[in-house]
Image (tube, rainbow, N blue to C red; front, side, top):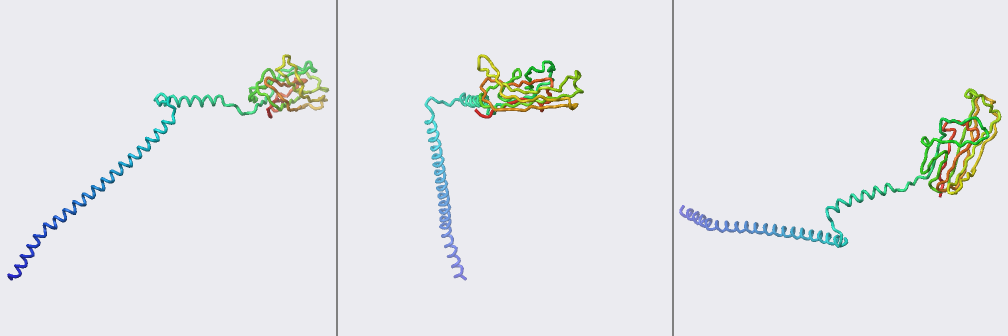
Length: 259
């Protein structure tokens, strides 16, 4: 019994002597871990600071290069930043306004109604007037029965006129048993001091009407011609009082083919 008590005493005595050593060892380990963690965090912070510094250095170098490429007298003010977009907008607007119209010149005009041509003077030629408000006019002008050219080039000129007669519509009962129905296309050179019309083409015939209650005859012709700026073209017909006022029956036009 005494021996057992003695061994217990020795064991407790040894444990008491080893406990401070273990506690000291554990504290040293914790301190080492703390110091290691702080060291790693410090290294990471230093690396991050170096990366940020390198990034800023590269950015500043790019800014310096961009500044060096600008002229020495160029300064970036707030007024310049505002004025440049406004200037660009005005320049684009001006370019759009001055943009060249790429459409080819052309005109197509129906006969102007109502027609007020007299049956008198059947042998006289009459210039047809056209309805430019109901027709097409691209880069060309219309004045006093004439289509006028604004752009020189080679044009195709065409005209169609229809003549009709119905006894029920003729209160005067005019004799149309032997009537001449002709169409003429003329060219005027306005660059000349004295304007002399030049006949481009003519077509038609002498008809024996009154065979039926309703009579109709159409003339259609066209040709190519070189026209200069300011030139005019127009159509004359005989017996204009017989003209068909329908837009699809009597019309006049031209369009540019090439320079």
